[in-house]
Amino acid sequence: METFFSFLEKRVDDCSSLLCIGLDPHVSDLPEPTAKAARDFCLNLVKQTAPYAAAFKPNAAFFEFFGPEGWTALKQVIEAVDAESRRLGSLIPVILDAKRGDIASTAEAYAMSAFKHLGAHAITLNPYLGKDSIDPFLGFPEKGAFLLCKTSNPGASDLQDLVVTSVGATIASSLYVYVAGLAQTWNTRNNIGLVVGATHPEALVRVRSAAPDLWFLSPGIGAQGGDLETALKTGLRKDGKGMLINISRSIARAKNPGLAAAELRDEILNIKRDLHPPDK
Amino acid sequence: METFFSFLEKRVDDCSSLLCIGLDPHVSDLPEPTAKAARDFCLNLVKQTAPYAAAFKPNAAFFEFFGPEGWTALKQVIEAVDAESRRLGSLIPVILDAKRGDIASTAEAYAMSAFKHLGAHAITLNPYLGKDSIDPFLGFPEKGAFLLCKTSNPGASDLQDLVVTSVGATIASSLYVYVAGLAQTWNTRNNIGLVVGATHPEALVRVRSAAPDLWFLSPGIGAQGGDLETALKTGLRKDGKGMLINISRSIARAKNPGLAAAELRDEILNIKRDLHPPDK
Image 1 (cartoon, each protein chain N blue to C red):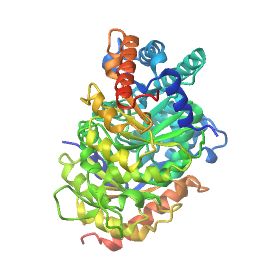
Image 2: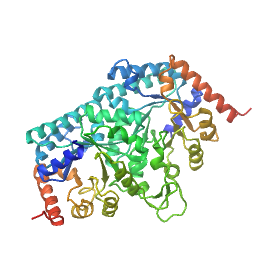
Image 3: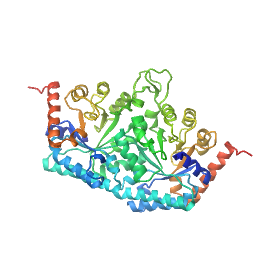
Image 4: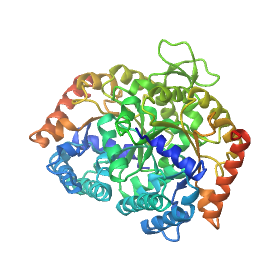
């Protein structure tokens, strides 16, 4: 059966890219503070960068900011990615960066919103409420869920680095490593990935060890200070895949976003080839 | 200076109520699956129950479910609470149950959406990303933030019950108790509360001990199985306040929601009076 990650792997092969392009219409980057300007900002990015995008990741906050018109814009942006997919003959997945998490009956409404009404292919979720808050999303067999594991921000250490033991257990680990282990266990239907910030290479190593099979969504390269080569070296799976490098501002604020995306795609490809030379 | 919690305490005094009324327009409770029906469902609840409401708590998911029209409905519902507040001459705070949590630059957009555009007075937040994900919300001096601490759902135990030690520390506690302690420390401007499910009386005891001053928002009475008297006995502050009992389905699905709310208000008041007799 097709799953989100089988679609994603096909797209990664089609465009030889591990680049996830963030669609974050910060109001300060727009010519005017309107939902239409946010939409046009994203439509331009999608059009210019689609050939190099393994995935697109719109962040819900920047659309929610504009209220009802923002939600209309978000849907139009996702539709524009679908149109580019058809034009290129290769489905480009859309990961809705929403970081939702609520009790099951409420999570069902969020899942319907993201997957059915907006048409996103995957979503980011916060694991703090536990498995039953994730399950409603896993009920969509062709959709994916990336659980927050180790985030790219400075405050990530406040909770995620705490040393935890489960009740009765003796083996301790960081909370984020524990979450990675849970995700690896919960991933019985090939529809769970992890958000692991590229700002923490030592975390990438530990999470890769705890979750050898899972796809990572890794923000933090560029504006947040993460190093691309180190991130790929520490986070890639043995098959040279398993990691989406998310870039938002470095592409969106480039003079020529298409060129910036092409260069980043190639830079990733070159580093990856050095690390995992293709079979002869 | 006025803060969210000074507004809330005034409202609690004005209506002698600790009842927070959940506005959760589950699509299965509506006569038709439309944003308009969701709005009308909530407007009716607000109108019937406002005199007994210490606060209202709309959950964003059930509005997001309807896309752009849902966001319009959510704003209209919050405006309707404001209108009731003016009519009653007593501000009824609106707590937006959104459980958001993102890196600071993104959290700013969520804060603007909730506080400025929608006009909510407080919001629920997920603490997994740490302090810098909370700070943008705390920057609004008259608004409040309830951090998820121990949630009412079964999966809450997956992460929240883990035994944690911070790096270098020797004292162990449950993650949720640790979060309560952080919140107590972070609450330098009287604008942080905690979400503590009424389904876990032992957790209410521990959290009250870790955070003696903070307001709790406690869901889980009724449909989720929590017991009202036990919850109040374990969660109230020494001054007989500090706890909002959230009820959603038991009121929304009652034949006469106004009567159901009045009865619950009185039931809480009676239990509270037994526990904390007023000074003679």
